[in-house]
Image (cartoon, rainbow, N blue to C red):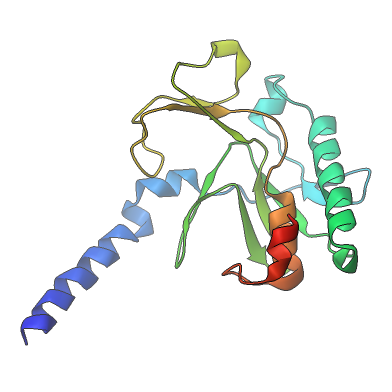
Length: 185
């Protein structure tokens, strides 16, 4: 009986932590495309519009080139899965919040059904504040991004960094990363 009394508050606490309508992490949800474009290499991707493109931090051509390069490199690393070509939803940030079991902040997410969500940007951490003109997004130390952080976090290169990781998920599934194939990334 004593243990049952401990379990009930624990379950209630867990419910509070994952309640999407009261969860400030929901503001960091991934972007889901409403319009599509196709890269020169044949990847169907989110057409935006993206604030970083409008502000001149990157261009649609650079996003296309990064995706096409990542897919070509993936095909070289995994010739047996060179056919993999997931549909891409893009978030104009270096991370987003994936809700649900096993959720967390991520740069990529295998949604399933031949679709992945990716961030456009990689993340940079620094002790000092990044120069205003050098980054698309910067977050100061301690700003809510899932946990307290003593460093500045900002956008770095336009690399859609998680493409190959998520393409491998699209090819083999393996949500727990148990396959030896992960060592080829």
